[in-house]
Image 1 (spheres, rainbow, N blue to C red):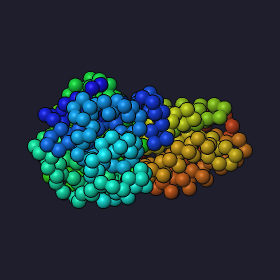
Image 2: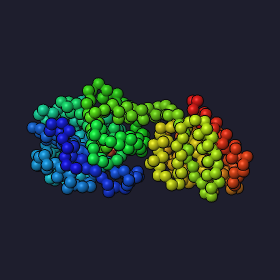
Image 3: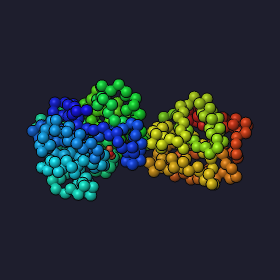
Image 4: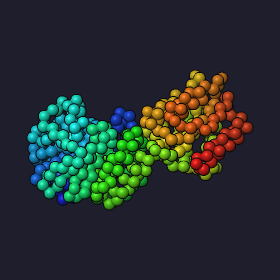
Length: 399
Ligand code: FEO
């Protein structure tokens, strides 16, 4: 895609990344891709807002050159230091040596530690303004959305909020870069939720603080550094982020995430009975085989749903390892406010439940019910599993 003018003199100059398989080395984006949205404001002074990962550097420079000579860049504004937005900084600084880097005070040290750059860095204070000519930039410090040094840049004349990670999502831009020309909104909604659950969820209270801080500012366009640019209905992504952030404070949607793993099909057979029971209760159900589904995709469901049904066998007196891994990630990410229940098969001793009780305590999840069975499930046990699932579904549905 060529550079795209969003407002007179304000251009999207980002790149789509189809090469990276694991975002942050953790989260799969092989199928979905991701965009690094960067913006160039061409005015009496020329400013670039956020950069890109060190992929497609030539394409990035070409985009700039469509509009101005790279030597004419006056400011490089770094809202956030994570290398998906700064990876090409060293190269760009060499090509545009007179450009001044504008960043938060906390970012200054990180620019040195990540890139060895110490010269021509100007820190900005919360609320500080800089005039480019017609365009006036105002900076708002928004720590921990996503790292401690993060800020957002607001262009006052056109009322554009350059929000960096906030309001962003996975998913390369598929032709349309604006919400009003996007024909597959559901894709971006799902990818924004997965991005939120994977990357941002741990910092939900800071997300809500940032939204509150910016609530008095008239915003016509939300221009994040990943995913769609929201110029028709910025309220959609704003409200989604608010909704997702609020799940950190209280219960989520009335729904159950059913996580299961099986060794020889015994816990799987019980899972079918439990799932039938949950469905019979009428509550929304999403099911994941944790052996085969990357935790990245599971976290979207886990973050948003109140109920977690865990089905996994005992393995060497402990919880089945792939289930333990998913729950460990949930713990590290601070997923709380859940009601849980557990079932699983065991061979000679049911040690999984002991580990699960400890894990649920650490997660602050209420373990409301559990049942275990030796070997394969007898017909009576399957009936019990069905009832167990129905009761848990009703508990979530009526909560
Ligand atoms: Fe898109 Fe926190 O980096």
